[in-house]
Image 1: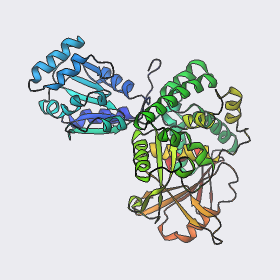
Image 2: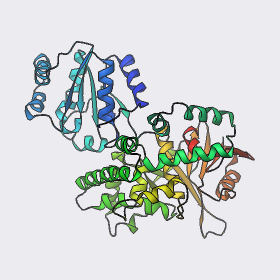
Image 3: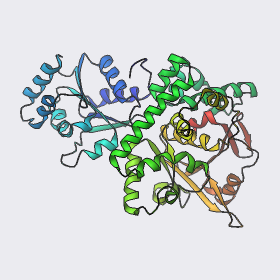
Length: 446
């Protein structure tokens, strides 16, 4: 990515891998397209090694790829790589980067022997969906440490804007359950809505810093969405995966208790739809939240694979996708969104950003619904977290926070299982009985 090199939290995890593993494993950085994998890996190589070779397999010459067809002579292979890239490598002080490793499966298969040789360190990058599509005929190395890079989280976004203080202060306030004051909360909410609009894709953030023009940022995001749609067309030429992807905002806005595949695709074969959904999840472009049939610790044991919701991995992309009925999302719409003046109910946008923040913080996503006393509708807990032997229910509100019937009913029904209950909303932090009301920009700390 051209432009600014952003500070990313994954860098510290990469540094721990280098120090603790000392070349005993290769490092595989996976993640969706355009989240900054190549950028962070090359920056890491520049700063932490004496020299490096970066092989971008999407552009590498065929003669370079052919080197991995026979790796019986590692001395020859490593010499040829140095010759081709005009770089001298130093044992235990240099790293070789296999960028977009999915485009040369034999190079990934070679990792086992290269790691055992222990001459240099090795870092791979790739999107998981593409990697899985290109491993049928190779032996997958077990000598890999795998890390995931997500779009920039809110703290990383604030760092990009030159703010090194706000999120650490917010964390202190959250731990102390300290109120912020209405004026400060309004300012922080506006700052957070800017993050929701721009999103965490490095190219979009870079464009915002360069132009301060949300319409220009929107064009960048549309390019990324088209790239994702093209990827889905590659895995599914019929276009079903792309339609499922484009329908995410509408499905969330419908307030249904699950993603309604039948309303998007008629007469789809169940096994093929399930395969498409798995591939979409592996792309890490979308996030799945699965219904927990029994809201108790060990959610995966009770998760339904037929009842789920789908979110976007980046709320900035989500907003652009939601307004894709126009050729470009105009600045006036962005300004209304930024100032919380758009008349549309934006609850589904806040639900998406909370899903994104919880996932980026290391949580799997689960929710719970059950019928009301009349059976005419459902109560719903938007998210469930597992903490030790207890659970934490979360209800998300963009307005109307004075009523939170679902959360109250859930606490009555499962009181012995609950550690903390949270209402995530757009006001200052406060306690209401045994429920903590948390401003949305603090949801990363739950």
